[in-house]
Image (tube, rainbow over all chains, first blue to last red; front, side, top):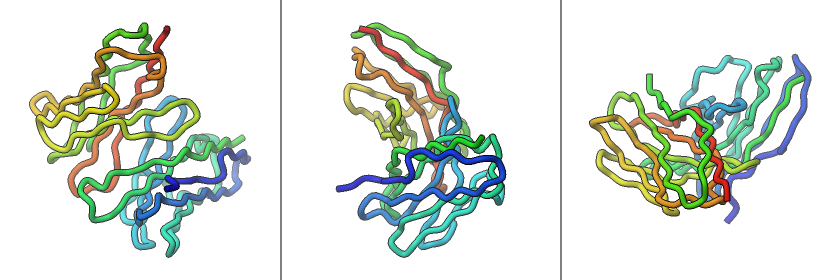
Amino acid sequence: DAGVTQSPTHLIKTRGQQVTLRCSPKSGHDTVSWYQQALGQGPQFIFQYYEEEERQRGNFPDRFSGHQFPNYSSELNVNALLLGDSALYLCASSESGTTHNEQFFGPGTRLTVL
Amino acid sequence: GDSVTQMEGPVTLSEEAFLTINCTYTATGYPSLFWYVQYPGEGLQLLLKATKADDKGSNKGFEATYRKETTSFHLEKGSVQVSDSAVYFCALKNQGAQKLVFGQGTRLTINP
């Protein structure tokens, strides 16, 4: 059973560019959450998608947007990249309707903005 | 808002030493509490969890007890191994909320 997968593994962009990160949830999971983990910090919640809609959002600007597809996979888009957007971006999937909705994390995409 | 505070690292121990990593939280309601571990170059793995007061989560020799009276969820292990070297994150998820709230992480290094 494949776990949560993310692509690409690493990415280098320059300021002002746009980036798209991808996530495939664990089999049987229908909910995807995205987190940003800056170096030396804990992950910060960006948003969560369920039934192809954004269900909850953290304290991130509108430059961060997402999408969920009918197969439950998800994309995270970041526009007008800033140096401070350099981080590890983690995707987590969970199954709605289960007690405590345990989240399973992927290996992350390391984004470097130059 | 909800928050999690962990003891600052890094923590360096010798193999077979006793480990404690402190974690306290602030939350409205009755959150579930978690410890995640992150090995170098990898994502987060759930280590253990507790969903109500006085619950004890345990896994791979690690334990943590949900203490509502002290709002704490300290991680302990009686005898650490070199393979336990990683970054440990304490986290909470409040009732009705979708997001996990993480502490800043504690880097643990075990020397042989």
